[in-house]
Length: 361
Image 1 (cartoon, rainbow, N blue to C red):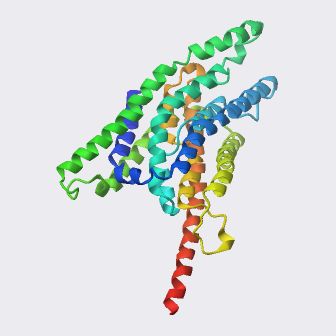
Image 2 (image 1 turned 135 degrees about the vertical axis):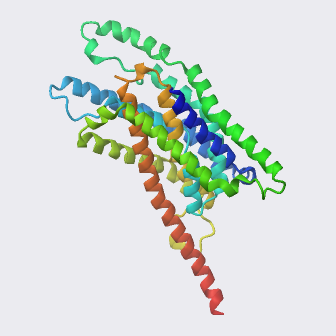
Image 3 (image 1 turned 180 degrees about the vertical axis):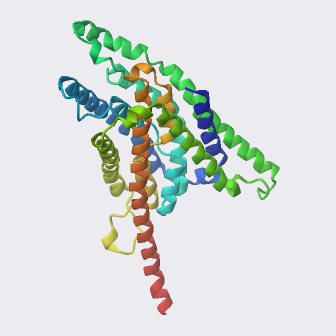
């Protein structure tokens, strides 16, 4: 990973630690079932979709190779990007923000984010290793597979597992994600102590500009990754980009469809005054549904930068993989933003309906 990219990743997670509120996390401990379901769904269920993505990418690439025209298929980097995006934990600040905007349990959302991203440092490398061991992630050059097909098939699994050092990936994720997050949290507590009651040096009062620092760092990381594959991106036709956007939308809809039934059955809003709105999730359900259906962009870009070159047909494909992560991230933000706005509007109507009779008497 380039040192500049690693630096900005460290900045992002240090800022996340600086803005992490301990009291909010403690308040969410009582929501055991929503929290447990979220951890399992984020770290154990949604990464399984990456197998389907990579299988589809392999099939599409093989079909294009056998087709003399060679048109109509997305580049391999897009499939790698989407599969990595599926394997990482949930979003960081944007997920909690959407939950808060939708009148959900922000404390539970924060707890889910912290725990899944901490565990994801260990779990994500294991999933990447699994994709490689299944001979899906590491690509071999099709142009070189002529008369040596049988030999390549026998050796391919060995190449896949040996060229991906999951231990190195784990160590790098620890150093660039978990350590800065912990350091930021410790620094927050130290500064809070210096400020006495917290009025002098309180990170919450500086949350806005800290958020700007984090957003700027993320933009720089995206720009650095995309610029590597700039020429390849320009060479893509409108059809490939349209398919990528469609897959990003489909991926998020799939996660929503997988998680929504459990949330609506076990975390339904029991306090709504209108029976026609029985399908609304509770505050904990809102946090669970949004966060189990989202994936984090910074960790995705971190994992992509740590993957070996053997995972890509060419190094430029790494930049295209970053583009796929960005597109999927933007799709989920737009869709969940609409959902959160709808929830907020419904809650506002509920509050108004409850307040109106009281005003009449």
